[in-house]
Length: 191
Image (tube, rainbow, N blue to C red):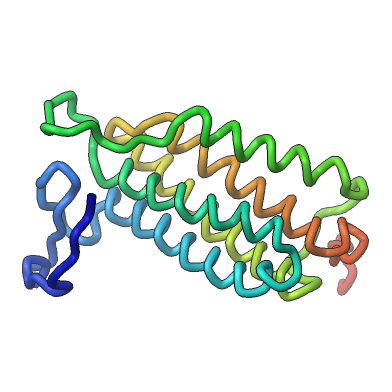
């Protein structure tokens, strides 16, 4: 499907990049920012997996699936839906991918202690990195939401990012001894 024989092409030297449709856009275009931040999220998930592979292999399997989905999401966002025939079927995030995240959230959440306060990023290294993944994915979600106000965006792409940040939050609590090791916010503690 993808062949990368030469890594540098020099086509971006003018500050533009190509979308999946062949259209060229400035590298600071909102669409490029959106899928670039999805790529950043994927990189953070790679860091999370360094810890998950040793501590929670089941979570690592889920994160491997998510990394693949994030490439699908990047492809979805990199190929605007203009209604024109591209000569191929563009890759789009599906309801099944969103539902898989919901199922994973539900499976982990049932084992967590109920929350009585907001959670501060912290606890175990795995949980802390999951919080970082959550915040980067939230930024990606904000960018995709902004993009959807200007251009057509697959609604499942936005739903996927919304569920993904929720999954990272629940997984961070799961990694913090199923919520027992959560670092809780104490309102006004240092007044």
